[in-house]
Amino acid sequence: MSRCPRNTCFLPDTGCDLGFTDLTRCPALKGAPPDEDVSLPDGGELLLPWSGSALGLADLSFVAGRTRPFVVGVLGPQNAGKTTLLASLYLLIGRDAIAMPSSQFAGSYSLAGWEAVSGSLRWEPGQPPGFPPHTSSRSGRAPGLLHLSFRDPAKDLSTDYLFTDAPGEWFQRWAVNRDAPDGAGAQWIGDRADLFLLVADREALSGENMGSARSSLRLLARRLGDQVEGRPVALVWTKSDVKIVPEMEDAVRGTVRDSMPDVKEFEVSVLADIANDGANGTGFVELFSWVLSARRSFVDLPPPIGSHNDPLSMFGGATHMTALQNEILLIGESGVGKTHYGAQLLQRLMKGEGRLKMDGAASNLEPFEAALDKLNEGVAASHTAISTYVDSIWPVIDGDGRKATLIWPEYGGEQVRQMIETRRVSAAWQERIKSSQAWLLLLRIQKTRAGDDIFSRPLRDLRGVTPEDCEVHFSDQARLVELLQMLIFAGSIAKRPMNLPRLAVLLTCWDELGVNGTPADILSERLPMLASFIHSNWKTPVILGLSALERPLSASERDMDYVVRGPEEFGFLVAQNGSKSPDLTLPIDALLTSSERVDHRS
Image (cartoon, rainbow, N blue to C red; front, side, top):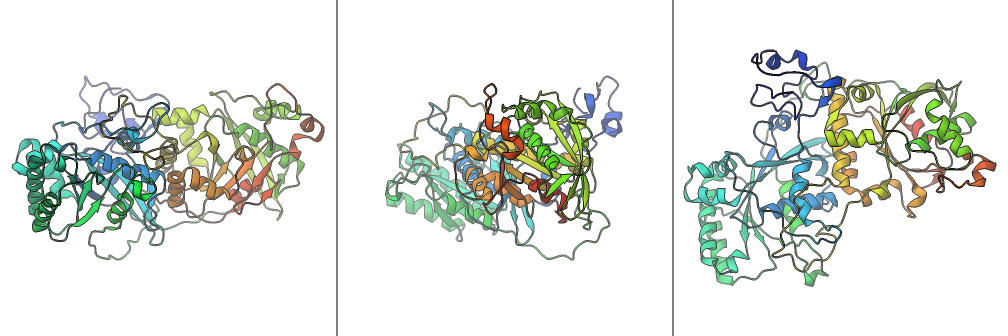
């Protein structure tokens, strides 16, 4: 498919910027020139309207459509540490190290961009961290914008932030000439930022060219002082482990305060502070807590009155749904134990000793026939083929006599990974999202990791290290957050009005973890950014532990206990308070009977 003729639309790389999922209805494509190829994607796939990279002006409206974002301008000379500053923010969010109850991570539409700037600060096998690559001095009238969303649960309020990622050469030209063509991007930041971080590089201010560095910073401070007009400003001393002569520090500070008397000061360094037990990342938490606590002035307006609940509109009233809705969207990548749990759940329902039991016969046991046979013979079930997606309909009844029809899917987990990698949601998956009233996310947490970075392992020396491999690899947390964002977006397109379905998270293969604590604590400890995203977007998610088999099974050697006693005698659930139960139907019962209507909050 060729490009859309609209200069703000990036089909086929992203979805239609006018919001048409059926591209045959898009007026721009209908009016395309005769020689323009506007063939449609096969299968009705939904293309996401964000690429994951840093945002530009053309696609900024996707974020700004909900409310005006809070723009944080990061200014400083070349090689002053601006990109490292941004990378450090993202890594700290990934560790839930910025402990602010009023600013809970709620998502990002530029996760690939964040991963690109932060990847070099992570420890990889055989490769220590290095400084992020220099932001290229490209031409442009606006910087790259990295997006983050935070939520204040107490006030039920979301705030979108855009952090500017711009080359230092822009600011150097702008400081000399406000109207310089190659400083237009810096002027854009000066006009539109709500808060400024002015970066002062201690290494440059103590080096061979310290006089030039001081002069450049003075010019930039004066230029910013002319633009700031009462907006908050922080003077950020980077590489604070480097000592500079007091006269130089006083001269820089005096220049900045002459132009901006209310400036705040912070000192940061990515290197370990020997005096602070070798901890990395001096000063970053204090700086970013100040950034996230800043607010622009506003006025209170009366609440709008509406008749619908469109997640992309500010108008709408809540609606209610009845309990015991019947379709669950099972979300899990390959190897998380979907097949084993489905087979064991079916065994429990048929045995009828749990909270839920079968109220009749399942419509189709073929998807689980092979797995049931394997488990009854005491061996592990085979991997589900990637192309498989079969629904089995199970009539169930609970202990209070309430009935429901449970639609349980069996599919290859590679479908989920493929959806993330291609950034396309197939028509079939759109339909599943549309028809589901609850989501069950399966995570094999021992197969995921937050990874080590400069804030988790001592690091004495980083200077002079430059990355050799700039390829961007999504971290596990970013990949899972992006998956949930994709499903939320696809659901809001496929089903209007949409409130987020109820959510349960199962930490599978719990017997392999060998840990004590509640499932919610383990999730927050191992994948803190994902946990924060979940709690920001769902009021009361159910987070449980699951051991569907209770012990590892071989694919070839039989476990005779399974053969003699039956697989239904094995497996356990870890409740939200950490207690164990043999009833594997409890997560499903919680999803089916919950009457809470959860609002769309991302």
